[in-house]
Image (cartoon, rainbow, N blue to C red):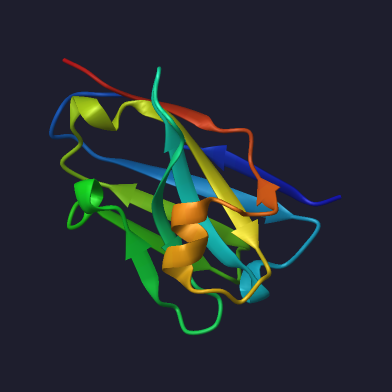
Length: 127
């Protein structure tokens, strides 16, 4: 059974940091492009950051460039999103996703057409 389980969300003050984790089971992440998405209240889901399986290339949405870092540990079958300098507008439910197709990582991230999704973890940035 293919499964992605996120953890690491919580309440943090503006300027703080969080690291989200996403553990995959039922498949190995080595051959999958991975992504982190978020949905804020009243807003559409957006691709935050994605990483290609083929060459490790990455994509970041402009609003998180320089603050967030996506990483994978294939030995642990885990994906991470390090989030620094958090802002109130980063408040959202964050989801990880994985897809085996070898498409442009920007295309995959902006379209959100990933086949496998986690259940999400809440991130709240507030003082």
